[in-house]
Image 1 (cartoon, rainbow, N blue to C red):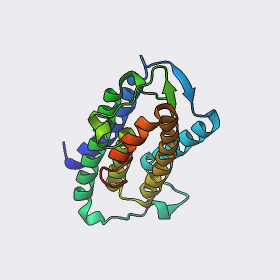
Image 2 (cartoon, rainbow, N blue to C red; image 1 turned 90 degrees about the horizontal axis):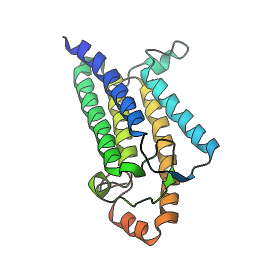
Image 3 (cartoon, rainbow, N blue to C red; image 1 turned 180 degrees about the horizontal axis):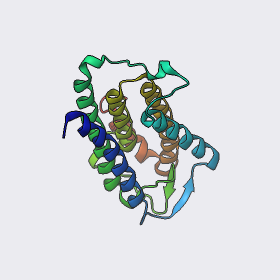
Length: 196
């Protein structure tokens, strides 16, 4: 199998495997007692789906400028390899965080579960929102591999969706856990270890 063929298989397989895991993880979670309002949640999902669509459609015929490369084609092997590594690390980080979160997780947007616990270990000791951070890293990695402006717009949309969810989740966690969450937020950055 050639290098090009490997990467043509790797990216769809990595993302599809992640989506399948996410659906499997959606079973056996705690009962939801509070959730984000339906309309903002649906808008957030629509933005995230638009980001994914921009990343994975082969070309946008009506907007040739979006199909132009922002990275040099002469170095495509480097960018695709780096993108594959970042995509894998990002998706793996989300899976680690999801497993560590256990039954407190929700696949239906930002929620509070019955007997919700404040998780501060594992990946949550590195960042407060490791699933969002890992997802953003995976989008950046895939964009580097694609190397086109449409992927940059896809990353921007994904970051908008992720940041919106983080803001809502921060509010929910502060309301639910109060001073304990404030102390946790003092110790651990929200999105990028040591920075954001």
